[in-house]
View 1: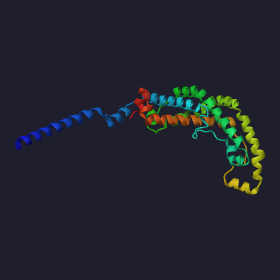
View 2: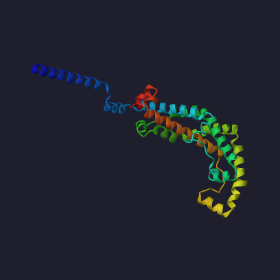
View 3: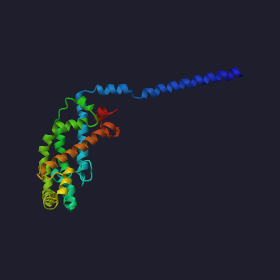
Length: 261
């Protein structure tokens, strides 16, 4: 009897061990090898990588222009919100202390509204620039970090993009009365806030706080245009990072091939 029980136990143990081995073998077949994945990505040619990077950028442009093109898309996004121009921003505290809250807020809102109005109209310019971009260092860009393609795109196209986009921004600024609000805020600064600096105590405090008392104005058009473009690039970078990190964002075969883990 004892021998029978012992033989049965040995037999069951052998069968169980065999089944576990079979299961492990089958599971192993279905688990992608990390080494193979790395090799597959390193074997991608520059043309394939370039196509994937460009598609990621185009996806980013669509995301950026759609999100920022919404009503208050810039204004309600702290990462891209356009502040007062430098010559007023450095004295913003004084302007508001002197009762200029509404004028400052109106100017900020008008600039951000102009940028949001212009954003969708810039999409074709961005898309065209991406299509024409030569990514000779595609492999390097692919491995350069979560915003590698956006950084490369920004570095190599910002100047040309600015020239093409500026007229769109200027038109939107006109529609949103940006110049009018700027003149009102600037006049208020000159008449109500700046005189406070004649007080030696306030003047000394202002300088200690880094307030710029020089009211020379940079081009308002250039300022809003640059900030609008910076905001678009910020959102494009956000989308690129998402595509790199999240398989759900890899919505096409080329994106999966280039960015898939």
